[in-house]
Image 1 (tube, rainbow, N blue to C red):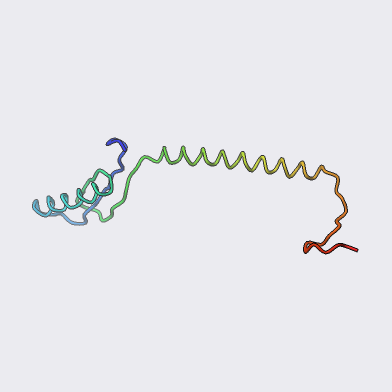
Image 2 (image 1 turned 90 degrees about the vertical axis):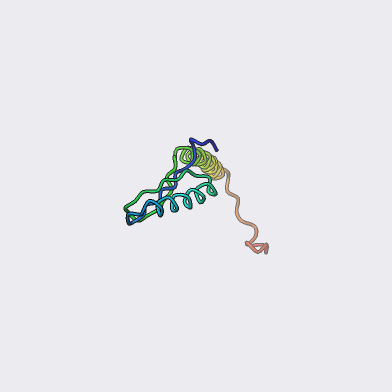
Length: 101
């Protein structure tokens, strides 16, 4: 993954930290982000952490898969329509294989 394409781990700390505590938190979060293959950002104030990423590649892939699914469904519908055009023959056996008398 290129450096530019890495997601961003954003951590918001609810209170203001001293300079030492802020540096320590930044170092620890940087290690976590590196293990996850992400960039990191520490922000004082607020209280949540989440991952920001570019969704376009994922959405493009999902749309391509949906198109494949749509083509398969269209083919299935056409095949089922063709079956209905076939001459229906009277049933000769039950589902369990016994002949109909």
